[in-house]
Image 1 (tube, helix red, strand yellow):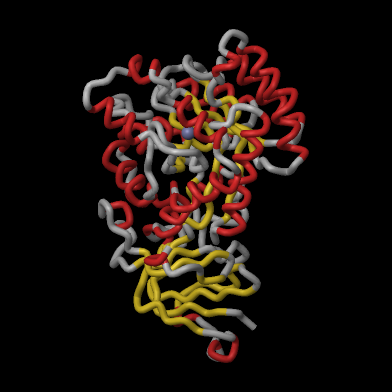
Image 2 (cartoon, rainbow, N blue to C red; image 1 turned 90 degrees about the vertical axis):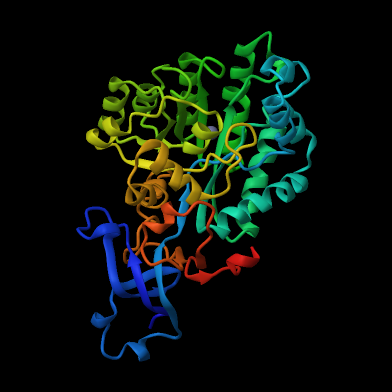
Length: 412
Ligand SMILES: [Zn+2]
């Protein structure tokens, strides 16, 4: 007996290796039991007695169904935002002037530290709802604006609560190695000691982190410091991810590959050796066109080389207050196509199958296949290429998480 049967829809299964574009099944049907996909195929191939097999049947009026979108790289828990500072820059203020006035990432750190856990949840929920209204059913949320034990754990608890109240699956990543906080400016090693000796163990013990990340960059953490953070993560049984090669080549992708990272993210300055290392270790490349766009970067990641080497390509919003205030996965897909030359099918795979892989969830989510979670996005489009094509559209008709239809998207 099925809990629910969806009919009168086209299915973009996004299954790996499928012959049809988007792994499509025209005039399909999808059955759900216990929150998982129990049957999928052409409506014409349903068992003759299908009406007696389902407790409920829903007609989707010819909509397209895709896997629920997986936004595998966000920083969406933070206090305040930086719109005014952005406006000041456009009015001619320099980075130095803004930094001297206490702007930049440190203004977000101050606001995040000052906010209570409740206030962080309240500030972040509209961003989560915006993602959900655009089809996201799983989101990764990083800490990294607390930069001390209490504030980092507070951010991860806020992320955990967003997962409990927001009808969206949340994976939490500890990113204490995001920036050196002002109180450690004279002794950065002491801050890495704090991350390694206190914050990672505390987050692991409290079960608040699913992975550990670092910002390996000249303005972030050195490869040697990143190594220490990764070693501590491994000692506490946590997988790693890395902000790598965004602004310069630090050999971060190869470092990530040596540590069997889930993903290396950004990659604008990735070298051929980095591509090779990622391919050999099966590290997912997470492309973040929102940050590239907002920073008006001019060096795109080497997508052709990554594709040729068989590195899985994920795409994410990188939702954050400084460099990518983006809450639309569909616009991120459009940017991945226009700025990085992904195909619309690659962009959708980047937000489904490969996004799930970047979180280590590829056996549970990310494609429409029997046994996987019934996390679905239902779209009012004639073809899945439209998901990456329209700029600013919200064609979501319905959304299911673990087989349960969630808040009406328009009211989210
Ligand atoms: Zn990021």
